[in-house]
Image 1 (cartoon, rainbow, N blue to C red):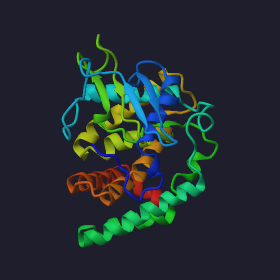
Image 2 (cartoon, rainbow, N blue to C red):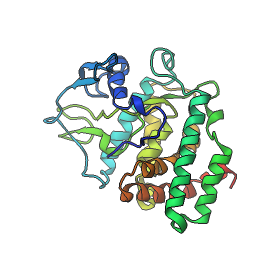
Image 3 (cartoon, one colour):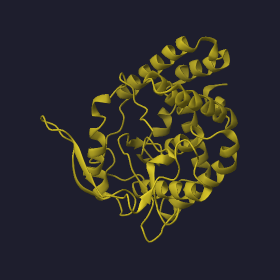
Length: 294
């Protein structure tokens, strides 16, 4: 699956080096069994290319399904579980924004918002009446109320490291079972889009963006329950189940930006058009319009 960056996206110059930076800084301080082992990494600089030397998992692990087929419920639970264990390990860690990553500044957030709005204008022009007046109005409200999540970051509480591209094909599962077997544990990979932020954005990206309503309505709440229970088991406190629901609804609305960026990057229409349809249905199902004043 391609990344959701496009040629005009802010920070594009760092794409490719960010994963090397992750393995050089984050992975060594992460508990074992959550990401692939890295033997060497360099983010490049001063005329040198970035590189990674990771363990070979071809004999022990697999991708759950061939895109775009969804994994089984057990496989999804394993994926959500490893994501929760990783994010629980970094939950409100004092190193975040100091020695690990950087918080997005207001100036950077404004640049992204301007970019997203440009993506929307270009796509709306391309689509004509294929993009309904109702959906146009919803996007207009989004940009009028942005930055939507600004208040959520006050105090920088209940935040962690976000994967940024957390679809189900970016998790290696052990060959001998969906969870843990003799060959190892589920492992999160493809960290080129990692950042500090709201963990629910990964869950919204995995489920609301990629799943049609019938599947999402069957599995969404049980998987959110499992994610939250795993966080608590990892020692996270002060973040109740209702808070996760509120963050998830906010994240679903924010994920409306993803198909805009994908279309702007000229990804195949079956990818971004399907994402657009699914995320709009999720916004409606979860009452996301209320966050935009509608």
